[in-house]
Image: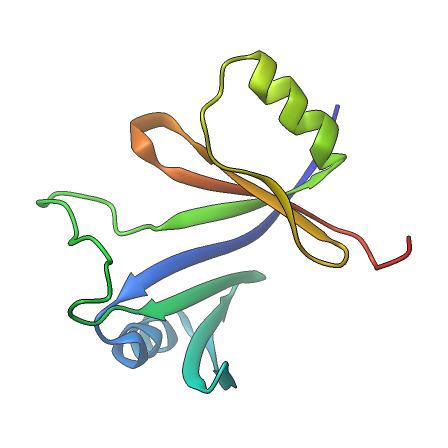
Length: 131
């Protein structure tokens, strides 16, 4: 049986700073700001979970949120020990892959699947390069 571990939640917001501030104010979350690819990025660390908050701007191709009530979650990620074998098992069970298994950088493999009610789930495995 594969080993699972919670990895992160990824949200999209028109105002990432305000969203991060809300988590900080309401839950005493730690807000982490840094530059990534020349752009400001804001993330939140909450209860051992990382919440990545990506900006949404007009014309960027991000779909509008569904009509409320709805859930504002882009995807959640699960660490899977033995990802390649687990992906094969899911494929055999008819699970829909929205992004096929791929190595995104040395030591990091990932894929996305469509979960119930169209939720997006990232499965990933992190291994030190050369391990």
